[in-house]
Image (cartoon, rainbow, N blue to C red; front, side):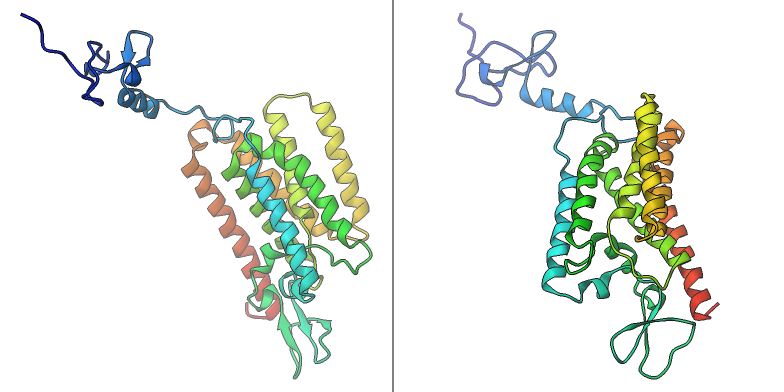
Amino acid sequence: MTAAATTCYRHPSHETYVRCTRCDRYICPDCMREASVGHHCVECVQEGQRSVRQARSLFGGAVPSAATPVVTYVLMALNIVAYAVEVVRSGTVDRFGMLGAALVGPDGELYVYGGWTAPGYELVGVADGEWYRLLTGAFLHLPPDTSFGVMHLVFNMLALWNLGRIVEGQLGRARYLGLYLLSAVGGSVLVYLVSPETPAVGASGVIFGLAASFYVINRRLGRDMGPVNRFMAGFLLWMVISAVFTSWEGHLGGLLTGGLVTYGLAYAPAKLRTSAAQLAGGAVLVVLLAAVVAVRTASLTGAA
């Protein structure tokens, strides 16, 4: 007596006598996947891939790969688009640049805010509830009709290109984006604390945050710190020199925030290097920064 022909469970029209060594179902050559012992079907292979635990880096993200630095590209594009908007709409910097507290007079000019207002004078800035300036100011740069002009954008984008790719590759996209945004806000918060009356724009504070992150990453990975130390010395020297004509408060605030965030990612106990724990830590930092802004606002407006 001849045995009945068996067919593939996925292709009933294909005759076969080979079974999947995991689920014991018949599979045709199109459905066979070579395994260490025998062959597996497509579904068993997919199930096995889902059950494999993904390797994590020292910073809690996926193991770094040679993937395209998508977030760095997107952030550069946002800065460039924001600059194009500045060129088209001249009031963009005044509306969205970092400004702690100032009075706009009847002539449209800014005046120092001393805790009081007068008829025809209007309070503007973070102290007036415009908290978005803490972030939007980091995506704007000096207008083209100023002395530094477009070179302000060019230098920051070159620095972002060189530093961002490295930091993004080590931290992963989500953590890198969080670091970028927190460094931007951290720089603005220090500007608000020290010089609330001074307008400030630019991604320089973020760049200093990325530089601090780069330093912490290399130290955590045990790399040769000689070149890294010289790199950081140059950055710190530039911060001192540029204080004459730029916002050193924004630079220092970004540097401290970027270093603090990366230190937390790199040196936290292993059980805290999870996405949930790191997200919670970032939320705590945001709350602390918000509290600082609220206290500073109360002291400026006399609402304490």
